[in-house]
Amino acid sequence: MSGATGPAQQRRGPGLRARITLLATALVAVVAALLLWLGWMLAGDSVVSPSLPAGTTVVVSGVNVKAEDLTEVLRDNARFRVLIAGSVAFVCVVGATALLAWTFTGRVLKPLRDVTGTARRLSAESLEERIALRGPRDEVAELSDTFDAMLDRLQATFSSQRQFVANASHELRTPLSVIRTELDVTLADPGADAEELRRMAGVVSSAAMRANQLVDALLLLARTDGMGIGLVERVDLATVVGSAWQAVRTEAERRRLRATFTCAPAPVNGDPALLERVAGNLLENGVRHNVDGGWLDVHSSVRPGWATLRVSSSGMPVDPERVEELFESFRRGGVHRTAHTGTGLGLSIVRAVVRAHGGTVAAEAVHGGGLTVTVHLPAAH
Image 1 (cartoon, rainbow, N blue to C red):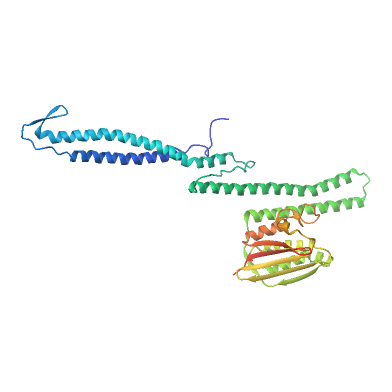
Image 2 (tube, helix red, strand yellow):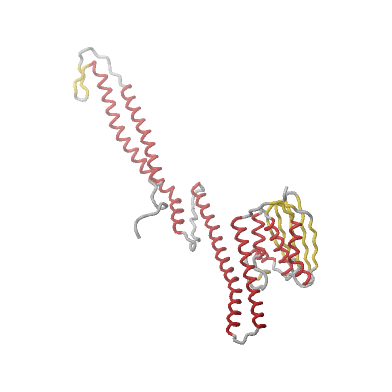
């Protein structure tokens, strides 16, 4: 490797420690020089010689001085002594200032060096390192705490992304493996008839549809989490519930579900397609994770500042302590990656869309089995 460095690695002049030291030393030097000049002026102006007869000679520092020149000689002598002593003091003060400024600045800036060193050592695989600065709660400590909090968020995000990618890979591998197995088995059978080919085509079509649904859900989740909402219109939650119900009504009737709708107008501002996806996912979960002959209750309302959509349904018992896990990716009914229908991203998408619209979503287990999911969104004015 050559010794050349990129623009981001090139030095940009003296460091902060050197600049603070130079500034403090320069300020003290200016003040000391000003004091030395004032002392020099005052030393000359404060000299007063006695009145002597004309022609008198006085010995000053071994030199004969006439009486009329005595004041000037004493003034020059005093200024010279002040200049010598002041110069020595000036050098000592400036030197001591530079040394103390360099020392104390190094101690003050040590936490910043720790932040820099930690940042240089960090990578996606070593985000567990923290500064954990001890000492007084000053601005540097606040910076250190902020940096540690940022690392906590980054570590959580990287962990979540790794888990999401692993789960998505697993989910996509399943239908692809089914497709490959069916094709290999059928093609290896020289006596496969039309019925066998149709059966294989049905299995492949079902697996491809599942993979397509998963990819669509992943794209929607990525869009919502990464870019937020684009189109903003006035949307009535009661209306999107009606549209979403049409997609699952046939399955609900086949499973003999008793559906009750109490949908008052609940206008909000947001993306119509995303809000319809919220209602659709909630209704799909209420139908698919229900029991035959069960019930489904949908309610929408509005109160000052907030519009509410609540979907309750019967179903298998859900552990109240694990309800929050249902909002994680690839969770189905509290069981991880075991169901044969759906993508396991329904409630994850609901939460992402609701958060993008500035709302909240919560779930609670229904006594005897089932789940209630409640969405609160800012009401349209």
